[in-house]
Amino acid sequence: APDIPVTAVKQHLTDLQSLAAANGGNRAHGRAGFRASIDFVKAELDAAGYTTTVQQFTYSGTTGYNLVADLPGGDPDQVIMVGSHLDSVTSGPGINDNGSGSAAILETALTVARTGHQPSKHLRFAWWGAEELGMVGSRYYVNNLPPSARSKIKAYLNFDMIGSPNPGYFVYDDDPALEKVFKDWFTGIGVPTEIETEGDGRSDHASFKSAGIPVGGLFTGAGRTKTSAQVQKWGGTATAFDRCYHSSCDTTANISDTALDRNSDAIAHAVWTLTSGTTTPPA
Ligand code: DTR
Ligand code: CA
Ligand code: ZN
Ligand code: ZN
Ligand code: ZN
Image (cartoon, rainbow, N blue to C red):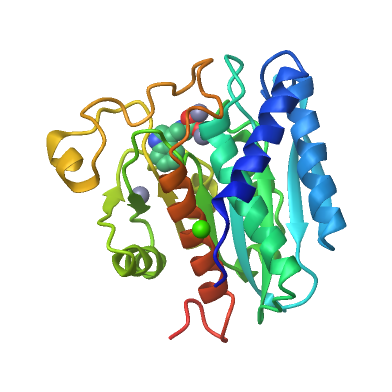
């Protein structure tokens, strides 16, 4: 897989922060900043040749949106999905939570198109609405998938908080094969990982998992404190992985470039690996 330049990912974070600043200071469900974020990501993907769909839903009396982007081509009976929630909490711009995941998968999608990569499986990306209210957008998407379409999704990869300023390197432990794709990549760059246990049921992979779809993903930590053993392993400080979790200080300054870069490259590796060949994951 090509290297994802962290500078390109950070540019998307700057753009998202500008959108929040221009729309009341956040990108929350039902607010102008969220709709502006959807429009921004959609425009980039349309320009890159993706087939985009904005799926509308209502929650607590306000309209929400999911953005789904399909790369034309690939085996329609074998869909690999990659997703991140694009909404923030109301307290701030939500740059690590979850601009980081949204920007990383956006740059991965743009890199696929830019390099003319033609994966053998069908590749679909999604930016979810209303995750902060309880994974509302992703649940709406899964619940409205016809069963025939649901069985074609061979894997769903979730990226929610992958640039925490005091990062840990956590790999979802839900599907062993998908977990191995990520663990092997991190081993290859000499970075130890731990299994992600904090988040079962706490992000957008939950609905896919409950529908029987294999899920995987990466996480760099939220409000919990990094232990001294983890400091030994990863560096940083024995404080919160993200001290600005759900706070107004979750800005572009609240990002570890190293973590964002490593995770962006891990995402690209997983996308290239899982969409190649004829079986998932490749035998
Ligand atoms: N609920 C997510 C943050 C979160 C907390 N634990 C995990 C584990 C895996 C992914 C995400 C999370 C949010 O605030 O968006
Ligand atoms: Ca990189
Ligand atoms: Zn959150
Ligand atoms: Zn999140
Ligand atoms: Zn898990």
